[in-house]
Length: 137
Image (cartoon, rainbow, N blue to C red; front, top):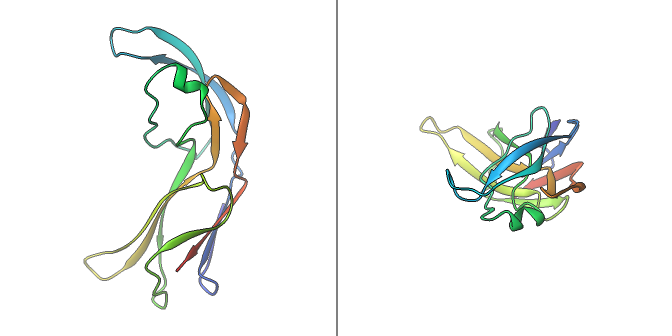
């Protein structure tokens, strides 16, 4: 769920998706192996960006990028912000943000928000960002 407040220059996200577990295969070296089964957390509307895990052992560490969402929000004409800062939520939640201007002069906010952080070998110990607020500056 997304709420944009142009008056305060904030964007609030709430994770309302049900997160469930799904078994996936992890192969350390493509077409060579070894092959391991690990658990991924998935939810409707949540997606993954690139996850920099290199070995099966590293899947025991919390994800740098976990299930989250990507947003493309049109900014109202009166908003002159050039940057974005995390106002509320865990520090790992803000995956990336840019304010871009189209060829037609439209300004848009591009956001990558990570809503779940966990280790694939310990999915029950997930950290969930139920509310994330970013501020336009």
